[in-house]
Length: 302
Image (cartoon, rainbow, N blue to C red; front, side, top):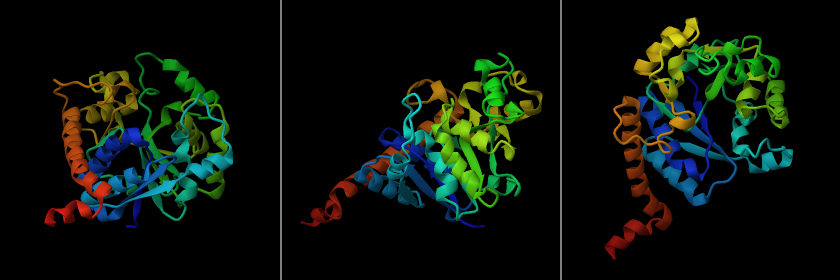
């Protein structure tokens, strides 16, 4: 198996959640020598980059940083509703990583509980993009909530909106993606579409989408929802994910750092909390060495 790049994007605010997601991936990966992390960023401090590199190294892996600021500025993209341009960075993946076979793009509000290498071979060779169906668009309790399916069909040209994928976890098949696909992803950034990079990815690859099981991107907000409220063909997948999600996604108002639950018994939140403690401890160990360099240890012998 070739190297499998895992691509994330974050700013200073999300350093700890990013490291938690990375740690959860590595803890469940069957062969960490097959994965390497890449960060697409617009503005990160050098010291912060060095800290993340050291922490990820302590986890047994490698992380590289790709500064996309000049690329974004040169394209003169018009920002939509003051949305940070970092939101669109995953759209650069088909251009930047064209020499790889498959690439995983993942959000940093994820708790990974399964081996991400499993989904590499599952993606059919003739499909360009793999992801998990958007749970909102497949939730029947409120019919077409927010006209999401209507927007998908009429604005994005998606024939079956129920196949629309959430961009929190996406696998790019670079052996099937064409240079024109890569260019079109970037060209679409200036379109005034809701849902930003997610809408664009679904539009560009609408004829070549593959849906992984719901367990690979299960929304925290549906943890206690009756699985029978979802579309019939994914009900069993939702039920399975509620009990044993491979990736638990803290979407919207479920983010642990914004909406803490000190007395929670939710196993996913408890697992996340334990990882946070490990990550913070490693940051405490690494930061003095990043700031002070070799002298941090050498001065003890003075």
